[in-house]
Image 1 (tube, rainbow, N blue to C red):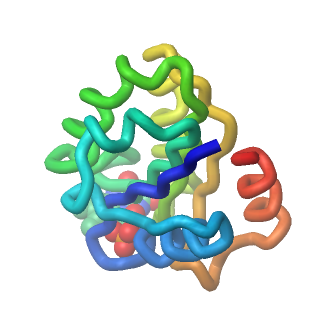
Image 2: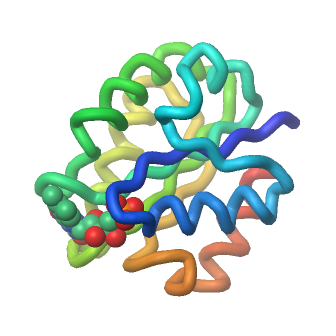
Length: 133
Ligand SMILES: Cc1cc2nc3c(=O)[nH]c(=O)nc-3n(C[C@H](O)[C@H](O)[C@H](O)COP(=O)(O)O)c2cc1C
């Protein structure tokens, strides 16, 4: 199965998690600005990262437009969601998953990390990676 890791990150925390995941999957992590919906929609497994912004929301400038364009085109793919947060306990990711599921996506895994790649819980991380296969 072809896999791609894509992310948006304001201060590098989600980027560091993206790079860790991509390294373990043997693929490259791409910032949203380095790819396109037309490219991403061709992969079997799409691993999409974006941090908690706003008030438990997605970044509105880059992530949301990309996600809203992608969502209707990936119902037959696997989608995994991840990202970094500061204080909200991962609420933004639950909302994101709900939105994706309501939009017809097959969400197979999610991983919320308080901080950067060094703060990843090992068991949660292993389960996340295992769900991508
Ligand atoms: C404008 C702004 C809004 C934020 N809103 C939230 C929030 O609602 N909940 C939360 O847990 N963290 C929030 N954070 C904290 C970020 O999610 C956190 O710093 C994260 O590590 C940033 O990841 P990044 O380095 O990939 O951008 C916010 C940060 C900023 C700058």
